[in-house]
Length: 448
Ligand SMILES: Nc1ncnc2c1ncn2[C@@H]1O[C@H](COP(=O)(O)OP(=O)(O)OP(=O)(O)O)[C@@H](O)[C@H]1O
Ligand SMILES: O=P(O)(O)OC[C@H]1O[C@](O)(CO)[C@@H](O)[C@@H]1O
Ligand SMILES: [Mg+2]
Image (tube, rainbow, N blue to C red; front, side, top):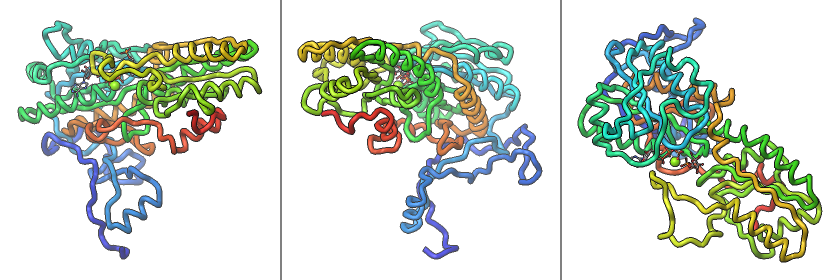
């Protein structure tokens, strides 16, 4: 392609809008550079998805515009009349550090940036949008939320389990809600999109916004979800102490099981952050216990040389070892598969194997379980939660709908909900992150 020639407009992650934004933003921001005042974000400001030069050159060669997404932030024109705007906030799914920070910053942002006067707190997840449960609403004001960031959990309560989308939209409409902020994981975001679809069908003016929350960090496309960093931060000293237990006995083995239903980011990050771990087992890998290259044999070799071992296992790892029939698979209220307890299975299998091989071992099994997700957000997550909430408020006021706010390549962006829910983010076993895990643990590429 010759210089100066225009690229074809390629695919971008287009976001639905309720209509044209016609009101002037009440924010006193600048429109020009060089005046030391933050500028409104221009509508054509996009962030590249893949920042490698090779990918960019490939797009140039194919005469295609690279994949890009909207930069998040305040716009000059907004859609909603701030004098009449009413918002609602709902939190769904499992707990996660930082939920209260997000609620607090949404309330502060809506109130102080745009002058929104009424914000409803929906109780106990999507249940709270079904009047049959009788949960009622909480009035969220700056005075009410000012201290909540100091606590873990969610002041609104949460739930799993499906609700009738029509009933939820009726509730929003009947209560005059213009903006619905949903804070949750993949399930919540799918629910939010379904609500947005129903709103569109009815032709009503309600924006639906998603703020991705999950300690598992399994939301597609975005750099990370809030709460993930705190979760592995809490796991870090637990691993340190597990190592003390392992080295405190001849042939001591410590097993730490961490959450991570389908993605092993918590286990892997915790292990790299406290690099005394010798084996990390995650759902993304296939490993066997038996056999010449199986996990038990590799563990034996490790004990023969070092006489202790620390194993960190993600709850969704090694599910192939349970040999369950598809029909026997149990699910929770939201349809998430309940996994077999890999921590206990490892403990039993390791004990039996070394007994059979006539070797003395001491096994300590540690399952911190919910402890890693019920803590308050650490400083890194607190900063992140603030940023997500403020950017969500700015996006919502413009009439954008069915979108999530997230960070991609270290920038805040808006993405359609469907782009982040159509696939679960998993550790790339050929990627640099997993390679770091192998470098840090010294475990083999394969154990099967
Ligand atoms: N496809 C869907 N359509 C409508 N609602 C859904 C859909 N999937 C999930 N939900 C609802 O979203 C809520 C939260 O889902 P879920 O329990 O799976 O948690 P999550 O948001 O994925 O968070 P976590 O990371 O803790 O799993 C539940 O009330 C669930 O019924
Ligand atoms: O027992 P609960 O509350 O349903 O949630 C457990 C699940 O939630 C998660 O923490 C995700 O939020 C998973 O890692 C875990 O499997
Ligand atoms: Mg989920």
